[in-house]
Length: 566
View (tube, rainbow, N blue to C red):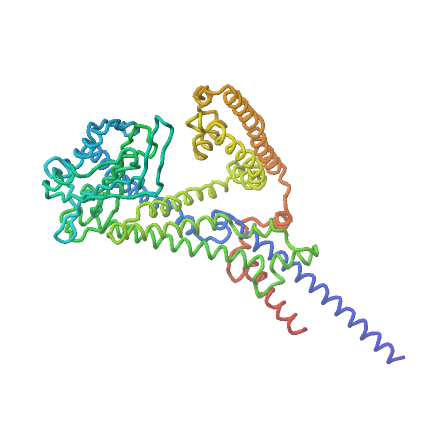
């Protein structure tokens, strides 16, 4: 009897210990879940709330504001520099048109043409003469290209069919479609050669396709010195084309200017401008360092979000493990993406673009490279992304956050809608190009057709588009009316209205969710159960902090105990 009572006492003691262990484990689980809520809630706090929670100054926010200011200054400075380059190119093109095209009038290049054989010879002779007298006529610093001690000659090339006999009066012809090229070179410093060679240069007008006159001129853009930048050396490859491919009796004359920007070989700049050039380089280096710091901080935040969701040695503490244990399912992708802050990705992209653009800008200023267009793309996209990132801080205010939430919620539906509408739009473009192209200038190419139809959707150029249709065929005229009326009715009254409805419905849904305050996802429901305010003190990292002691030490002890039991 004594032994049985002792056994009963042992069993009761074991049951009490097991019950105590279960209670202890359940209390630890509750503590772990509560700490996970606090840790996750702290991750989603804005910089001001994090400052109240832990007392840490929002250095990342301050860095982003400084970065926005200095990047904008850099973009404006480079934009003014790029504008000088573009202006120099455009004004030189206009100069060459006035120097080498006989009787040229501004804004008349589209209609500049010759109609008589004598005029063609006269214009070619005028170009050669003006090229030889360049030093005495130009007011710029233009000079002939020189390879060693020899000047690059002016080249006249005629392209024509190899052989042909054409009798329009008899409606007969015989043509060899092989194209031959006949060229002569004229030394700019030897004017007697041009007078001797040109009379022997015969143009075959009936077989002639084109006559191209090419030469190279050099110049230096000195205006950049006054704007804290070293001058560039330019090579202008001038091409004057007499186009006779249509053989309509009208030879169009066009002047093209292919520009190459090169590094000046020997240069020396003195005065205040030389010092300011080095200050600009130091400013660009400061921007690179700032963007690298910002990129590193944002990448760390992205890594912390991924770690909080998935990766950790204490996997029982992470949200993915908790949600799987609670519901038996994996975390939805919408909740997973919440941990990867898209704004951080945008800032990282802007930092990488700005760093690349700043390096190219330094190379341009030191004349290692002359890639103005590539540099402007990198700096422009980087600055655009930086300023779009400002919306993130506006979203911390409840009234402004509705714009961001609406755009994010409506984006998938908008993309699907645009794909469907784009198919209809493409069909109208192809139909309009093939049918109306011969009768309307806005439908000559697929590019102009797309621009014209997009303008019609926005209500632009409606009357000129209808009016300019040439009424050469009653069938085409009727088709054009049906085509345009159906397009306007379909896209403006139906498709555009449906597009606006998608945005409006999403806006109303987001507005109702904000007013009701009901959590819209499992992650939001999980976070809403944490009632600790940022200034409650539980988020601070000190010895008495529940956040540090409960969320880290307890979880580590629990993990070690489970490992030892296993």
